[in-house]
Image (cartoon, rainbow, N blue to C red; front, side):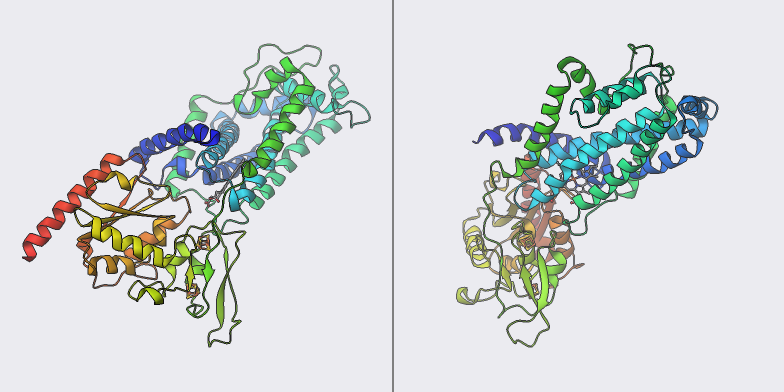
Length: 507
Ligand code: HEM
Ligand code: SF4
Ligand code: SF4
């Protein structure tokens, strides 16, 4: 096992365990662990809206800033105070959700190969989030603001790029001018705008990127933050006094954990840590580089330009181009290997991916090279022959442990959605007693939409449909975590018993 895998596996198991617990509590759709990116987006908008409200009441001067925030917090606690707390807690929640999102993508190895782009553009997002959050703390102009502002300015002065040290603006009481304070206010307005821009760049290459959490989760988290704001409102420290070094401070650890380290190690070490850490994080997708299988191939003889693969590809790797072979169709599918994750979802969507042909004719419009339609049928034929209970399990490379079920035979695909529904028909027509599709939990597909598209295809909501003639009681689906080994075993046993009953009734 590689060192990387040794570190990643326990983290992955930890995430899976937490996700399983949340599945029980919230159900798969509202599971916050599978909505970390959308939650971070949502928290940004909560912070943006509450920030605009706060700005209406805020005095942009050194002398009155503190007072205006105090008035808002205490005299108008029921509205202004709640807005302030919501602003703070949603910003903290952004750091939390972003951090978990980063670790989750890393631990599930969803950052290498074509995903490098989202990872790489995520790194400046971290910087911009920190600049946005920390500059917000300055505006209160209390002792915490003083500590953070002075520390930050000294840190920048270490670089020696400003003619006069900017920390000089904080030398003594009275040295901070309204002009400089206004600059700080602008930082807190422009940094979030850049952050939003960078967040947009971050998801630019993700097709139909989900940026909004499900409504229930959005409302629930807003209620939770509001309750937190009422029970534990955000308050200020004493007013800043540049003649005194503040000592008794309650740091916001989400944003300020680096400041005690800075006090201890000094500016040089912290620059080394920040720059070194960012560079290392940025190049992580290439150490080591992901070994990639060849991208899917389009066989024009079989492609009628129906666009289904284009509609279903979760990574926008397929483009419909004008026909190049003179065939009487308007378009043809073209794959961009640099965007393709090799999930095979397009193979499952192609209407020509039919198993009801001779082996020589088993060519489809779009096919994976490393596990082609032909390979898939061979494996399935073998599974039908060898399954002790006549059930064939279709699993994926990243999900449930389908091999653990000894009585059945399993076929693993990159994603269960690579299986065209006609293969279910084929399996049942060719001697399988039952077919069980054992995929990842809902909203938990490694390839984003694999589970959703497969459910839609099997339930007749999305082309290509499962034909009506297929007896539905011979098909079972289980969307569960790789940790749900017992559930998988139990479901197969129940399915087997159900099949026995059907067979008894039929005979
Ligand atoms: C405020 C911060 C962030 C927000 C709001 C955010 C949001 C998102 C969203 C909405 C997606 C697309 C999810 C989907 O529709 O499948 C995504 C994907 C991704 N994010 Fe972030 N993200 C943030 C920070 C980061 C950071 C710091 C990193 C790592 C350095 C990162 C790494 C990734 C990766 C690798 C993916 C791609 C997953 C895939 O292609 O399957 N993100 N992010
Ligand atoms: S294999 Fe997956 S990512 Fe690649 S083209 Fe097909 S659907 Fe898109
Ligand atoms: S789904 Fe198949 S037939 Fe339709 S455009 Fe894609 S490759 Fe061509």
